Image 1: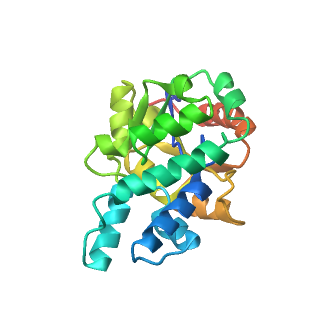
Image 2: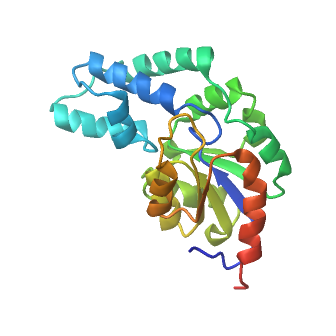
Length: 231
């Protein structure tokens, strides 16, 4: 079990599937758009292969397999389809507002999504102003999740030690990146995309604890701080 050397000074949230219940919407939009452009893929396959990773990385893999580039307007097509779906059906993860109000530590966002996507998704559910300007994207670093770059960048921007930072993640690449950054990770499996047994998957990936209700988060943070040893 991971044990922090000191108390928690920063809470870093992933965005999709942790703050906004967007992963089913996103996987569907990706699957439909890729299939239209000659790369047949199901929603479940998008989930298994690309959840938690940047669109840039995912599309490089797709292009390598296709042996050709995707159309120049592919990203704008995907963005338009995704944002239309967000406007129609996107919701915040239940109880996230209450959880944020009960957390004493500074908070920020570190997401594989673009800044534009987070402005739209977080703005849609009324969470953008709770985090701005401390909203960080994989587009701001060289390597996205599962590399540690984004988490290290977020901690540096917040002027906090990685070893005193706690990450809330819902994906295997996100957990891997946080662990590589020397951070402690909680695995959240309360999004509509999470399958039965997904908590076990997150724990196997290295999550210290898992939970599926955001009302549990403040108490979990207190438990982790109680475990901390001086150092």
